[in-house]
Length: 323
Image 1 (spheres, rainbow, N blue to C red):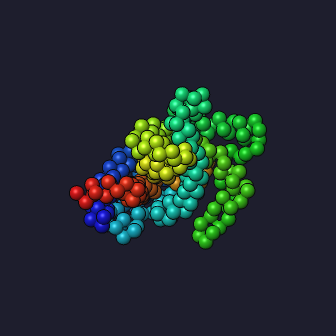
Image 2: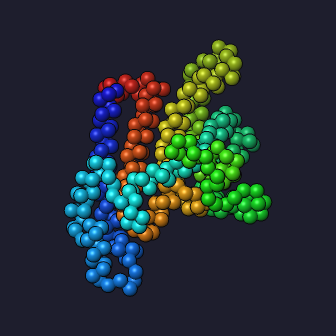
Image 3: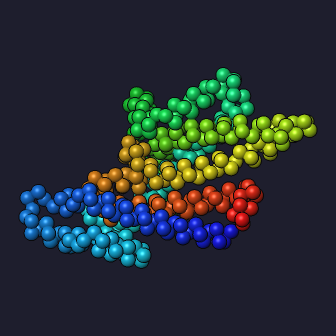
């Protein structure tokens, strides 16, 4: 196991390095950030002075190596717009995104019992209704779902706010909105928007896993022994369908953290995704590069955690690692 973890960490380092090159070169080719930072009436001398102050007058590879050396020391540069450290800006927005994703993923857990129900009785009308709902939830784009929820609950019914984060309570350095009623009201619509697609995916994965496990010999043997259906479900069935569920849930959690951009933009949720969009629009290169590198590293580490959980549940996976 330690060798496996060390190998994965080295792989993560390689992925982060490759990603940093692609992101850095891509942003370099998009445009000149100074065009967004100076007045249109600025002279060329003023533009050149700003480029020099930001280090943009050097070649791309000199800029990249300078960035890489600073990043190794934990310095991802400073925002071109605010002058604040890029990493600090991202960390300040992180609690809002993590809070949103945790609530959304908690909501998506409802897909597990619905998927089991659809798998146990695939021809029942209730199962067909569940699968129809999952197809809609999986197919409809997040921004459309968000807009429809705003129209229904914020415009027509007027019971929930359509934007911002609401009142927060500081727990140490972290501001949380789940500790206030106003915070929950602001959190409800974006979390529901993000959670619907995740719940739909969980339904489909759970149903497929249930249908695959039901014909297995150990399920038939348990039934032949006269075990209660609840015991067969909780012990024999649920334990064996947990592997794909945990794998998908872990990966979806990481993707939601990294790419909750659309949902945060629709609801003006002050998270990392909204910061990323604003930084891309203004060509704030240090913030964009720092964000993407952090997310790549986070996703790789999350995949490692999922693999470890996978091996903890499935003994055969540990044997494959030893081999």
